[in-house]
Amino acid sequence: MLIKLAWRNLWRTPLRTSAILVAIIIGVLSVILMIGFMSGLMTNMLGNVIQWQTNSIQIHHARYSLEPDVNLIIPNVESLETLIQNEEVVKGYSFRHIVTGMIASARANRGIKIMGVSPEQEANVTPIKDKLVAGHWLSVEGRNPIVVSNKIAQRLKLKLGSKVVLSFSDTHGDVTGAAFRVRGIFISPSSSFDDSSVYVRKSDLIGLTAISGTHEIAITMDDYQLAPALVTRLSGQLEKEVSVEDWQTLQPYLKTLISSMQSFNYLLLVIFVAAMGLGIVNIMLMSVFERTQEFGVLMAIGMAPEKVRNLIVLEASFLGLTGAGVGALLSLVVVMILSTTGIDLSIASEGLARFGIDTVFYPEVATSEYLTLGFCVLLVSVFSALYPARQIIKQSPIQAMNDKH
Image 1: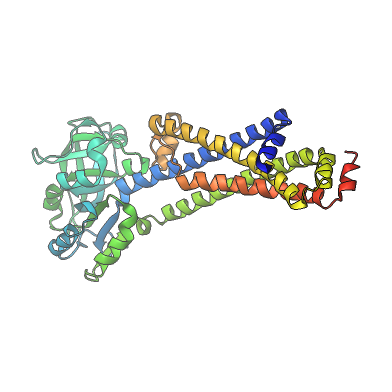
Image 2: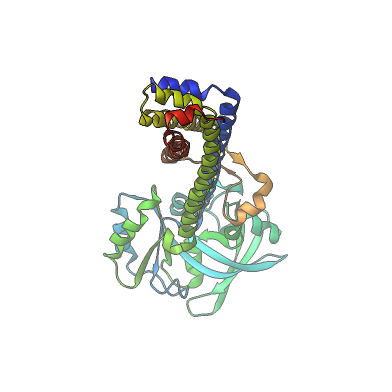
């Protein structure tokens, strides 16, 4: 009976109830979309950084990160490759020969990081083969091919077939170099990566540096969250001269950003819940106090004060549940649509590229976030009804029936 009575009481003033319901629905929709927007941005940025820059794990000589010298190659690469191949969580790996030098064309020159890679291995680790806007990826044919970013191509006035000269120091510290032909042009999500990296064949670079070996092993995994566990396993089997680092160690700011995003989501939730609680308290105060005489009559004919309190709490609970349910359902529909179409921010492409974010990304909202928000709305609705209910039941039936409000 209390449930039926509470629902009817809620709609005795449909305009007022509808107003607060609309406010709750819009609030829930706004919070969910904001959480989805921020989560989508973070997931996109994190995925791009891992795919293009850090990969899930990188292996170097122990001193390489402090001093990226061409002579600091990884020892016992063959045994290390066997260990990597025996790990089921590993999706792919790439052995890289890396030097820092200069790239020059007939128009300009600039400092660059030269990545000597095996074309087949690298294509399994980074998505570069699918991000070419012109030409082709590296192949075993041809003499000294090079793949550059579109940003470098524009700055050096390059096109497919253009000749560039790479110069750098060899293993003896002498300056060496050679001419390369542009075979492909790519665009990555990160402007900083595009501005500083080119790809050549590992065999070509080894012939020029006069040292055979691997400076970096990049490992990619289907689930990059498993990287710390793999680092622990590999580190226990490798020599002290070898350093194994996961993406969180290589880019510690990413971990900070993830924590900051979670804190932002909680702060947004607290602000919304607090504002919604004030609105529900206001509605319940007006609704309850204008019916003080009615509650007095109910207590006079024998309704226990606890049931009066429960009736008021049920009204507020129905208000919160209805608003949260409709808002969550509407949010789910909107998120599903945007998860298919994506959010296009091409107008801010230059700014997004600085953070390594695609111009089109997809919002993400976990089921737990829907449930958390719904629970918070219900909890605040219940607490919002306790004060008006207490003000009613602390009066005697006679006082309540003589109320002049």
